[in-house]
Image (tube, rainbow, N blue to C red; front, side, top):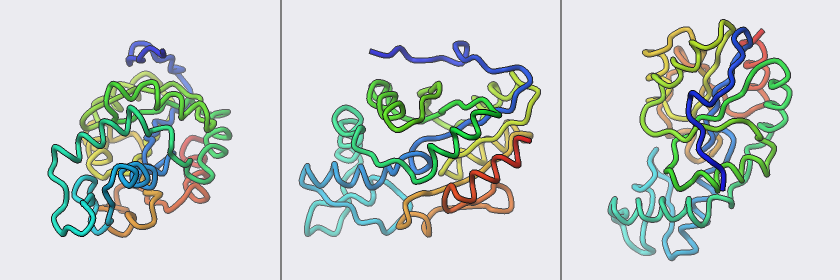
Length: 213
């Protein structure tokens, strides 16, 4: 079983560019995979807001699932279903190209028991980079990583609170937002004046290449 990495375990080159990359809706189609999982367990997903558990329902009901049931499904997914995620188109090739010029670190908010499934999924789909399992807002962690290199650093995430946290804690780190799920994308809070907003990796990849030059 893989061992969890800590920040002190990371090897970050002192003068190389650094890319800090989220997983869900950035590298992996999380909502689609989670939707398949909950359907197998007798529930359904109706995406009508930018949320997770509030989009889960029992068939025929109008009230979304209670938090406890939704959280149990989420936790069980990372035990039993997290390998069933489709990779976001173009992400693996873009990062492979970028990794010749910059260090890449995966920073993902997921439960501790997700370590094996998440590292296995990343390796299977061509994202064989060091991964930190994280919880909470990411800004302080991004600051600590970025302080270890004099090169430019970039952070890519789907969630505005994480991007705002990075802006506050580590304003020199360039920020980019991508929400791969086309149903979720129009509902997502964004701030394109502060964080570069991209629909897919065909534009995000070149933007990151320009940022790490």
